[in-house]
Image (cartoon, rainbow, N blue to C red; front, side):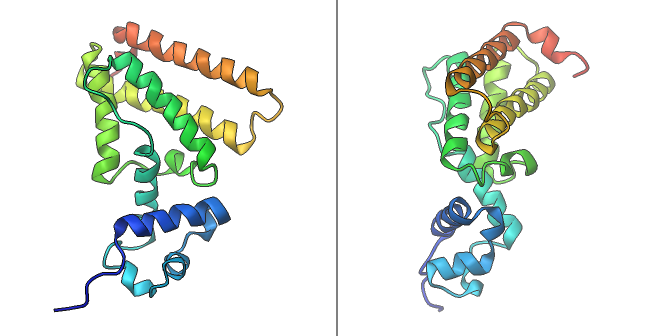
Length: 187
């Protein structure tokens, strides 16, 4: 029997997120994470298949870093709360946040978040293909806004303007939910 693990997947992802916040995504390497955890690089491979798995885990951390749907909360309320949560995650982790625009949600926990959005959209009256399409479009809009805000694309605007713009984006999200057939064209 081998030695018990001194680290686990959660500790590895915590260290990777800290590195990304401190040094940017380029600073996130298996070697750097191992150094931060004071273990050998090979020790990480018990829990991660490599850097791609590490980055997929960071996507998961970002997507699960805010409260998930409450059983009695209406879908529209949950979706707007989720959009606000995504914006807050972008503010907390601006260096790593762009991963959400470049990597798919592939871990089971990350897929559960995406699937929850699809389920809320189906509850709003969309078919499964329409809900999947609406999730792609709506999440891209919210992620794009949040990434643009934290990477400096909107730096010429006051915070009050950005808050108004985000409120307008949420209004558009609610309008999309109110008109399911338009969201399902070309399924």
